[in-house]
Length: 142
Ligand SMILES: [Zn+2]
Image (cartoon, rainbow, N blue to C red; front, top):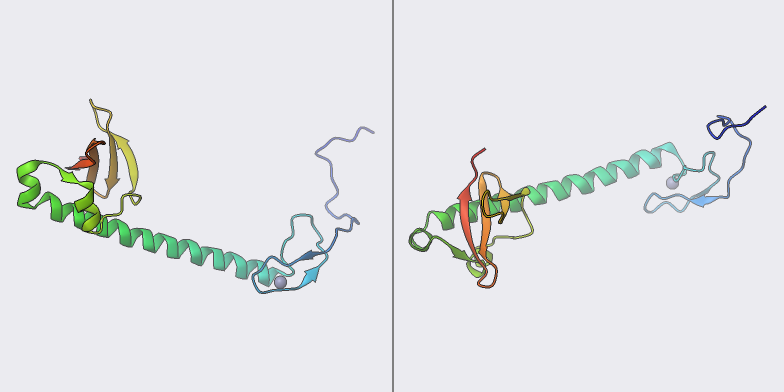
């Protein structure tokens, strides 16, 4: 009989070295029945996955909060006389108003110029002069 790699027994008598449960705060040492098992019991697996979900939810709600703040700043600046007169805004003013540059929904390229657009909701922030750190604000047409 030729053994192939795919062939394996579902129930094996193999014993694995004991491990410490990965759930935070659980100090239980257990003998896994499967090499992938990292929790001492199914409840701890469920608890840990719920905890991970909570961390992701928290991250997402914080991102949304910051993205909304960014949008608010872009509206405020783009509608100001200061911006309307000049057609651009300095990075310093954006940051001063509470804009967070690392927070955006996507990066796109402006047609023609290939300049990078940081998209935040319906607004796009385009770095028009890197040495002067000045940006223009555009409304993205979808
Ligand atoms: Zn445990």
